[in-house]
Image (tube, rainbow, N blue to C red; front, top):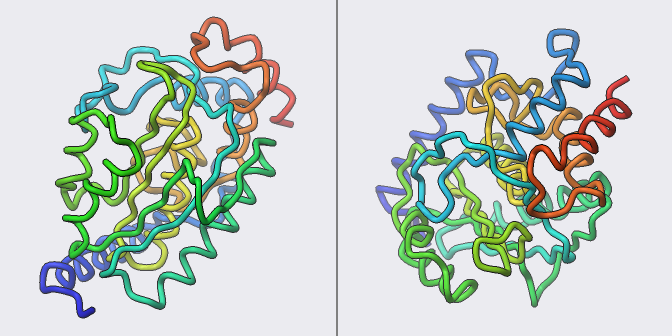
Length: 269
């Protein structure tokens, strides 16, 4: 399947975006260094802003959140992950990106201590790689996965602006709940290599419950400045805190804080 002119144009556009970021010293893959030292107090602050706040209003599509405090959001059931590829995705990317997701899922399982496995059926975390030429198939696929999906969430997938490089939406098993039961990530196949890897790292980690970004978080992928492309040691610490079994879905910031402080103190030398 040959890509359309629109898909080719997006490929060229995202190549320029990646090149511009690299020229500016962004999309780092070193995980940080002497210039990004952080303390346990900073880790607590970053956790509260990233895990206990919302980037977008719940049930309101891409409407930015007011920044009000949220609650602990996480999986309690095992995560069964699958990759899916649209008909417009280049064949050489399929094996490569499936392998990346598989390795990353294993890493996240080790970090969190939570069961995460790749499956061929019965998935509850779907990672969709789609081209511009596949966009008409995304919303119908979402409806198959989550038949009672909120219309606002569905609309987001139906018309992604090119400024949204990739996206994840996680759904609770209970109305307005905080215990995740399904998640769907969409990654544009037009992205060049490093941007695709970056999308895989950020969206899957966000789908585990680190749903917000914060400009002070460093070294971190949970920061809209794109300084870091791949999950850092700092971000692994956030996940370790989130998946401490003492933190339960729905816990408020005040309820979670003693555990967060204790874990951060133990994690940061």
